[in-house]
Length: 141
Image (cartoon, rainbow, N blue to C red; front, side, top):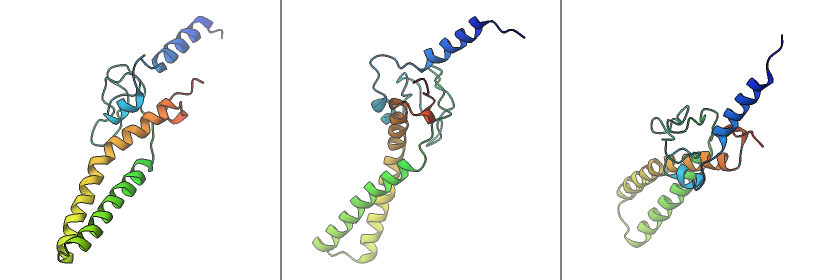
């Protein structure tokens, strides 16, 4: 069974055309803002941390992008450092009751984790895109 070659080339051009980033779009800033790293316009997330299947603006396939546990590890390290440093500084400087110190700094650590997790995940997905990682669907190299 013969298949015309021009059909294969047209499909390849369409696929590669959707993978080329728009000029002037910084994928890192777009990912940090929660936008598609390809076009910088469409939303990167459907929910709080669920990555969209495709970009609604450019049609880029985001389903293959997977950041794994990387963002959570970075956020835990950053938030843990800030919370522990703040708790130790408060303990030495003000000497509040231990229950008050723990309550305050546990809430601060939780707030920092929730605030940093989404931008960090967007940044990690954008790094996959910018470095043409195969997990991000950019195996055109």
